[in-house]
Image 1: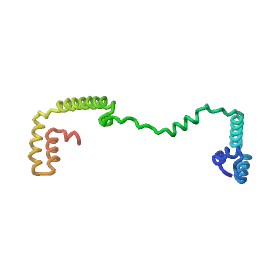
Image 2: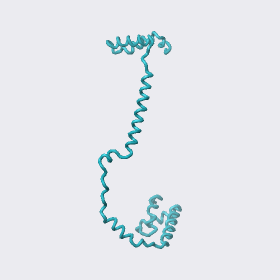
Image 3: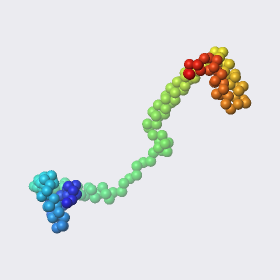
Image 4: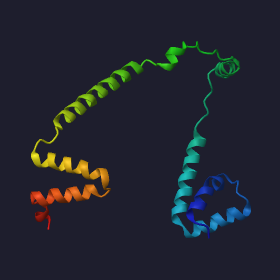
Length: 161
């Protein structure tokens, strides 16, 4: 037996009687076992009866002529805007001002951040930087060695152990 989804896809054709004999018999067998699909068919048939009871309305007198005229009348091309208006639409000045404002805010934030970063002035850091400069010249492992010397002198290495 077909699943309900397949049967429900065929209900409209079944209701108007356009299914071939084999498919119609299959749908009828399904109805014997499935009350859900029976209710679906019943609702479809009631809707069809309501639609059949409605009287068709007449179209307005000049409708078809106006549709034909609209189809057959060649469309006029809109006037072309100058090239600079196509490159810079009306909303671009607002976007440009917003971009300038964002850039200015970022520049000020960067300047404030950089001005707060001052070179270390304590003797121990200056000593480390001087030793690092001398060691880095000859030894690729100098960063680790200089850091070890600095941590050993400051006592910070003992806290980590």
